Image 1: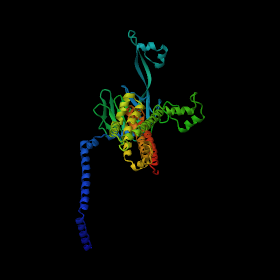
Image 2: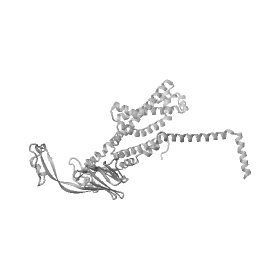
Image 3: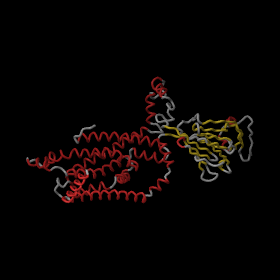
Length: 501
């Protein structure tokens, strides 16, 4: 074994002596590889320092990011518990609450009582209201008085008010409001908060981790994670209770089909009397879905179709214009260097200006709408496709063209049978790829006013509260991109003579 090893070593030394370039080449390649990886490592370290990536990650508010992501797949119900100076309360819901105009959820428990309130009635209100109507708002023992000179009087009214409100987020999280005190329970911990109009919001004891207060007397924010959150102020307790899913995705609160089960809806459509005398219940249901005021399905689908048309028309026109120009730019087709350079510089000009910049320019020229988006795609892709087409022409095999020319064919026939068969599949493949890519790009340029679903997506994001609508539109865009990508790959494979799997 030792002898064989020595012989092998001797043989290796002999080979190295006869062919020194083999070992030197291998050593130089290793050194270049080491230097390349070292350069990449140094550049990554420099980028980490230059852009302060570590500090950004440390200071990032991951809680807000998580809340935004949760908003994509959930909705909030936001009742407000308004607290009067005498301790009585009122539970109110937003005008466009997902629970509808008469919201009475089971997770909000209220206790009521009757109280007497004395209010001043201005003289103008007395003159505007009929005399008999005033008695319908008064208790039997109403005291009426006031100064005749002032022309005003007072009324004592008996009203039903909320004396206690309890909000149960889940089995471990709740908020109870009674007599100017708030009791918040979460994760086995309880926080007591005193509400006084003079002193403000005062917690009893230390705040738990899920409660924050910037300054003494100011509101306290209670964060319950995915369950929701609440703001406790001296005059109002704002509840944000989160539920998974998309509220009222099919029918909005104004629809007669709202809050009905599938079986109830089907029964109304198939066997009930007409809810609207002018149309069938099926037509009414379909109309309510399309014109859903919260999700705006018809408008979203129309804008998505605009985006698809923008991408298709812009790419089609770019391909049509780039096709003849590329023959003028190719040096082996058009033997005129000046014309070659002029056309190539024209392509460079069109593609050097980003599609987003072109969209801003055409939005200014034509106004917001799909025409600006189509023009931006057309200009950018004419330059890019023209350059790619010209390079494909310059790399063709001249033997096929010379063979057609040798039989006495005209110049046009030479291009038709000697050039086009070589480049036409490449041209079509590149055009299909840009068509699929522009479907995504049309969404981006739509956000700057070029029409399509991009503009509607940007409008939903600007509200900072309609993230479920953003998610809905993003899913639609992804579906369209997946379909177009599959169709484009299939067509390109067929054009290039490859089998599809």
